[in-house]
Length: 466
Ligand code: ADP
Image (cartoon, rainbow, N blue to C red; front, side, top):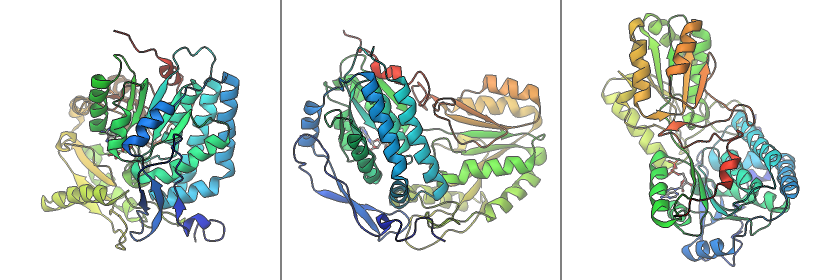
């Protein structure tokens, strides 16, 4: 059964065109193909990449959105309506370009729409420091994060230079077309697709008044350096970066619930969420039965084509990502640390078989493995405080999960753990725009949290003049 089968969704058969919507003049670079991560030979479409001349021209052309708050809010709400009206098309592009499964694309569209409507409510006329913002987004939420950054910057009256991830520029193209059709002026929103070099150019120009970035911690650090060297002192950087997220399951936890939440947290979206569970700490006393249940639950997972409703997880985004994850698993295999692994299709798509790997500690992981790989460590009853110190010691602080039925323990751990989003006796996934904003601490981000009341005001910050 196919969710977006032929007839209803011609977008699955035809090559999509990423329109050249760099507003300032004709683009100078050739187009590059976008490949379907689930089918290596399926070219989804062609994307117009921005070259150095396009970038310089676009920055010069950018003009902060002078319209009053009501007009800006109306355009953002109209864009939200357009996203909803074109849901099937957006689902199809997300599935085919990003390899995202049906539950994920539905949730992603919802989140994108929520961002538009929420930031529209926050548009205000007393924004004093309008300027030109660069918004750089990742491929894992190529519609929601892309839209959220832009919507906040526009609601505050800025001009936006949007740089989507190179892997997912087609969905960005459609989003920008809808924003323009909804009334956002083209000099207030320009799309500049391309790779890291385009991002680098857009974050090292003295005419930029701020940068919103979501991606890896390493890239955020590069951007900070580039901005320090090239932009006015105090130019704001809002960065949402990686995590090394843990969950603690103690011996009082309900194993059925814990296992359901572990599987969701670690394997949903093929583990390609910043919030995903990477390292499970399970109390020794219940490790054996819990891991047995976990293996059973993993065996139920279906890895396959993202547009099939029977699929639980699709491919990872591209060949380089696949290699990093596959090498990590191969290393664990040769060390004899595989707890369990299920099968994945071998059809040329970038599929990774969901895998659980034994580790002694979260510190055995020298970096975030952005795929369907769960690491499992055990702890003794009297070691729980050390475990918390070790998790905090990674320096990351994005999400944290806890399964326990000891009320006092919930209180103490929630107070001690350094993480932006804490999930107790539930899955380690999700945020709700407007009421449960998302964002991390330490190496995981600068704050403020996206989808919360403190996010938009940062887009009006006046740089400190030296
Ligand atoms: P990921 O590992 O998730 O791809 P990246 O941090 O590499 O994370 O990418 C996130 C976004 O940052 C993408 O849009 C990417 O093109 C962009 N990017 C990569 N390198 C740089 C850079 N040096 N400066 C600015 N943006 C960059």
